[in-house]
Image 1 (spheres, rainbow, N blue to C red):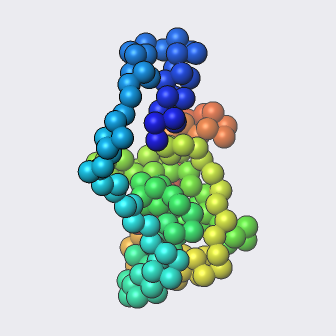
Image 2: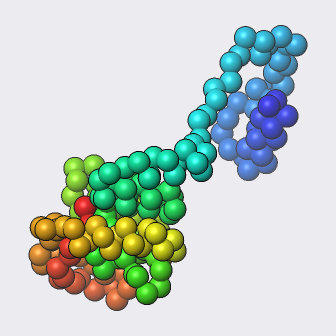
Length: 162
């Protein structure tokens, strides 16, 4: 651990960043980390993940779990998936929209970048079942936003899967 830290401090010094460079000269004693307990970060295995998805009786949650596991999308991006974002022909999902902290829909606003992610046939099948099962899908009528594809303000009707 110490050599990596020293490399980082030297990296900062090479870029003339403002830090106290004397910390690179600190010497750790031989028993300095004796009582240090490293935290074990739990990451589910594939069988554990599949067990959670397969045991879920609710089609909405099952679809979200499966899509989250396959795409690695953030929760706000998953909840922002609309009907038009699921492309059954191309075999994937467009992650274009998101939901903010107050559960407001944000068209064409995601944390990193808008992207298309391929998903399995089982995930697409779950999306299809979920869409057919919704009696009253959430609809945002006449949403006005700046469409980044054409760089113009646009007014559309959006149907959310959530």
